[in-house]
Every structure is written in C-alpha cells, then in structure tokens.
Amino acid sequence: EVQLVESGGVVVQPGGSLRLSCAASGFTFDDYAMHWVRQAPGKGLEWVSLISWDGGSTYYADSVKGRFTISRDNSKNSLYLQMNSLRAEDTALYYCAKDSSSWMFDPWGQGTLVTVSS
Amino acid sequence: QSALTQPRSVSGSPGQSVTISCTGTSSDVGGYNYVSWYQQHPGKAPKLMIYDVSKRPSGVPDRFSGSKSGNTASLTISGLQAEDEADYYCCSYAGSYTSIVVFGGGTKLTVL
Image (cartoon, chains in turn purple, orange):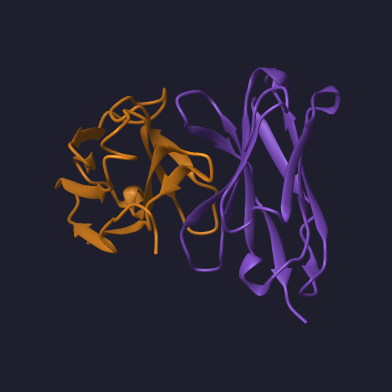
C-alpha cells in the first residue's frame, strides 16, 4: 500500500524555522517527483513546492520562494521542507503528495499542522 | 484569490446530477490537458477523482466524469449519493516556474 506520513508540525513564533518530513512507503520513491501542498484553516488548497525525482530540479510558489527549501533523501525514502522566516500566513496543514504523472497528486499524506503564532 | 475560479457551493438531491465548473486561462486550464479534481471530506486528506481532464483512477465510481471546453473544466457527478457531500477542488498545470500548478478555491457540494 502506498503511504505518505508527514511529521514535524508544531507551534512556532513568527520569524522562526521548522523542518517538515514526509516518510514514503509502498512505492519506488526515487521514480517520482514529490510536492508539498498546504491548506490554511478553513481555506482551500495552495501548491507550495515541487522536487524532481532526483532532487535536481525544484520549484516554489511565489509566497514561499526564498524562505522555504524542498529536498529529498532517496536512500531514506523521505521528503523534507525547510521553512525559515515563518509568518502568520504560513499557518496551515501541510500535505506531501506523490506526483503520479501528468501533474496529478496521488496519494496525499494525512498532513502535519504548522501554527505560526507568538 | 485562487488562480482558478470555482463556484463556492452547489447542491443537488440524491439521484440527481450536478456539475462543478473550474475557470482558468489559456495559460493553465486552456493550455494543457492536465486538469485534475480532488474530493475532500471534513478532516480528511484530498483524494484524486479525475486526472488528465477526464480520466478516472481505478476505484473511482463512473458516476464521476470530467470534461473541458476552452478555459473551463467541469466535474459532473451523476446519481448523487449522500457520501458525495464534500469539498471539491480543481487543479491545473500552469507551466510557470513559480506557479507550476494552480488550484481552484474549492466548491462545497451539499446533497439535500
């Protein structure tokens, strides 16, 4: 069974840093690009970042560019999101998702909650 | 403001059909056949329902169908069932370095 499990979400002060992790299982991790998508409380989905299968290409939404860094460790079947200079508007449930081809997200993890508050 | 425009809510009675629209531009929906749709029940992760405009993943009932005309994609749910009540999001490849994928704002489907 394909499974994605996020972790690392906590309450952090504005300006702080945090690293999210996503552990993948049930598929050949290094065959697929991976995404982070977030959802603010009561709001819609927002694409955050993409990393290619080998980590050689990365892409970011304008809202996080220069503050967040996506990475992966294929030897550990893990995806990461380093989040710096956090703002209140970064408060959200962060999902990792497998890019199953044709720019479709399947499946998604259960999400990890990041709260930026003083 | 989301990049793709969806109605905030739609409703229908059991057995009826409903269609949810998703309007973008020639730079996203209209430019590529990479439109997908996701169903999200409260407190749950999104689930892929349609990809490549009109393809259904295995396990998704054939009551769900997708289409596209110009810059507008649509998700149609026929034979509505109570368990279809959820939020639905469209998504499109957009090709821009900083907006490579864009989502719609979501549509709340209520089964009356």
